[in-house]
Image 1: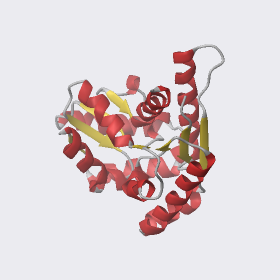
Image 2: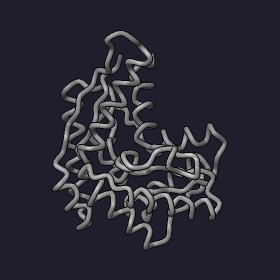
Image 3: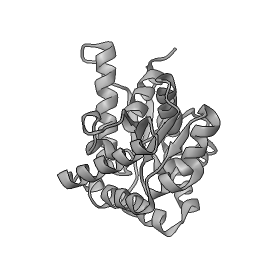
Image 4: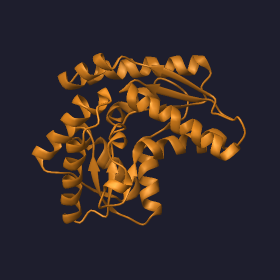
Length: 231
């Protein structure tokens, strides 16, 4: 079993979900008392959030590079970044260490591609929905078209993520808002919806959606187990 290196804390709510999902999946596959061999470096999300919203991505890249180097020194065999938004600067990680890096958009797009879907709704922070780093990768590598909500709805999603989900706050009215947005994406021809922020799965499940749901957190966690147990 390879040792999984996790960069977490963005937020710790979703990082805890990664840890739970990875160990549940490992136990499911191996049985008995098995759990995953892993290391986690947790950053302080207060600083991350401040630098995101002030546009200091170069400084953020340096922080993630340092976290990845800590994992490498600690004996991790590969790196999993427990957030969608910060994949904007994934190159800062891959340039700082020699370890393999499991990209969340690749894992998610692969799962969608295997289901035969090509036009998908993308929900996440405004950074993920509005900047090209996520959608371009899915299009260029997998031929996948992404659809995002209208500007006011993007702001609504962004605010729910940062003001509620990152604090572990789950509100029925926020779930209903997401459901209305997903229905709108279906009306625009989306065949499925990506929960493209690692906290959204705390609020929305497949049972809540009129479209098939691809939870990037769960998919990424399974991909980590796949790689850890591969020869």
